[in-house]
Structures are given as structure tokens and as C-alpha cells.
Length: 409
Ligand SMILES: [Zn+2]
Ligand SMILES: [Zn+2]
Image 1 (cartoon, rainbow, N blue to C red):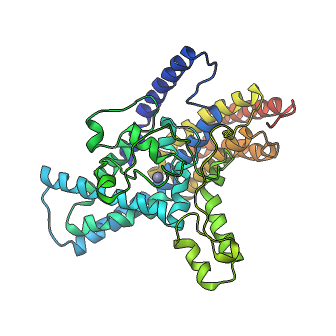
Image 2 (cartoon, rainbow, N blue to C red; image 1 turned 90 degrees about the vertical axis):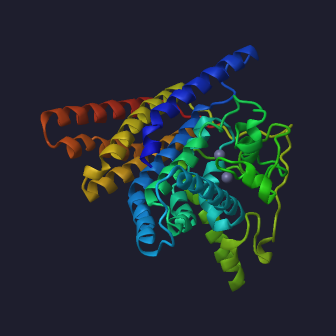
């Protein structure tokens, strides 16, 4: 997990390069806005990524302890730390990743977690960071056999981080076809297909690093026309909390509504699209009409976008601080900060939807944020000054932004 946190500056640098590429590309085509990035979509993607890192901060030690317990007590062999072991671990973890990812698309309760990664209707590097908050809790089970075989947990988490990091650069439209490299490796072209909602692209190309698994198990699809990105029923929200819970809500609702006891359970293990017979039965993916298809969008005043941009920058600073200092914080402080970050990402998303109710929710959030300097440094003059600047500055800015009527388009 640390590898991913340490890579964050590189992620931002590459996103800036991609944005510059899209601006240059767009200018050539006479566009005034980026055809690759939209601010609201970007903030929603980052909100999901931030939340997944915060949840990961609480779960990664437990997951490592489980790998270690399996390795210590039940391993079948003791594999030495040689290049061959690393290669074997990589092949095995990449293969298990393929199956975890494939099943995440084929079983409803796993899809409920993985769906988050697919909700964006854009395709850019920030989509790579759009991660489910619960995916780590569902995926780690798949790698337990690697510990059982005698691969040390440190090797497992390092290779696992590599497979995750590898997938960052493939979330881009900036790179076209890659010749012979595409025969073996997962590439932007292969992964664009994976994010497509067109029927022929759905549930294809589940690979992490090596595309060979899709070719071997019959799930490979070559990129033909550019996909329509996203899920078949768009989320239509920028709220990361909704993004992470909405499909669970759907599953629970269907389980409650159906009269068949068997179907109440089957809802969770059947593939996406399946519904109990008394709720309409299976509904396969329908092709979106390219001519009439419009991406979800909202327009808010420029002042609101500026407010969100400023608060988003503060959120990034606080999240970085949390991720690096978490070990030294008391339990109540860790949970308090995590709760604050979740409230923060939710508010920014909903503000970009043009809704007015986040005014009070943001008020609460700003008041809580201004307590952070006291919690971190103690009741000293510097903390008071920082708290006052945060509180008065943010609150005044929020009130000023809310003065004009907020339009929703
Ligand atoms: Zn997927
Ligand atoms: Zn992806």
C-alpha cells in the first residue's frame, strides 16, 4: 500500500501531462474545453480514490497479518527469495487477479464493490484512481493460496502493488495501438475495451498486467470503434458515498421485494442484470444509441467550482497527512479524521451537482476541519491561528458562493 501512496506525486504529474495533451489535441480540433477531463468527474474520481486509501489504512495491517498467519502455520513449501520465486509469485498473482477481477464482473456482491471503478463516463488517468472503498476486503482472499504455497507475505503485497500500479498508465486515450507489446501485455487499447458499456465490450479484458489470461480463458476482445465508457445504467451523481453504496442498496431492495426465499439469496450471487422472476427476470445489456447518448453533466457557477477546487486542495493536504501520520494517531483521532474525509468527499461531489442542502453539511464539515490543527498540534497559538484562518476563510467563501442561485442543468 505504501508503494501506492508514494506514487501519488507521479500520478499527479502524469495527469497534468495528459491534461496538457488533451488541451493541445482539443485546440487542434477547435475545442475550448478538454475532451478528456471534466472537473466534476475528476473530483468524483479522486473522492473515490481518497476514500479507498483511507479505508485501506485501517485494513492493510489486518490483511497482512492474515497472510502472515497462513504463511507461518500452513505453508506447504518454503520458497527462497530468488528471482525465480518472484517470477512465480508475479505470474500466480497476476492470474489470481484476473480471476478476482473476472468474478467481480460476474457475481453481484463482488460487482457491488467493483462497480465504482466503472462508473466514470470519461476515460483518463484519474479513472485509474477511482477505486472502490471495499475492494481490498473482497480481493485479498484470492491471494491466500500464494501464502499457502510458501511465498512470503512481503513478496505478495509488493507484487500485488506492482499489478495495481501497472494499471495506472493504461487508463488513457492518449496512447493508441502498441504493436507487438499488445500480444502479451495489458495496454490502454485493451483496457479501454474493459471500460466500455457497449454489449460487445462488456465483461471483456479483465487482465491486470498480462493480457494472455483473457486470451487463454476466452474473454479477450480487440478494440474496434471507441467504446462508450461507463456502466449500462449511469450513476448520475458525483457523490463518492453514493458511488460506493448504491448497488448494495439495489441488491438489498431486490432481496426484500422478491417473495421467493431462494431468490433473496440468489440476488447476491447471480450475475449483474439478473433479477428474481417476480421483479422482471434477467435483463441483458442494451446498446446505447451513439447519436442520442449524452453523458451526465451538471453546470454550477464558476465561483462554486473555485470553492470546490480550493477545498479539494485542502482535502488532498489533509489526506496526505492522515496517510503518513496515521500510525502515530490515537484511535479516536484516526476514526475522526476518516469520518471527516468521507464527509468532505461527499460534500464536494454533491456541491458540484448544484444542490443546496450541502450548505449546512459543509458548515459542519468546516467546523470539524478547524478542530484538526488543535487535535494535531495542541492548544497553542499557532493552532488557533490556523484554525481561525481555516474556519473564517472557508465559511465566508462558502456563504459568498451560495449567494447567487445555484443552477442545475
Ligand atoms: Zn473491471
Ligand atoms: Zn480500469
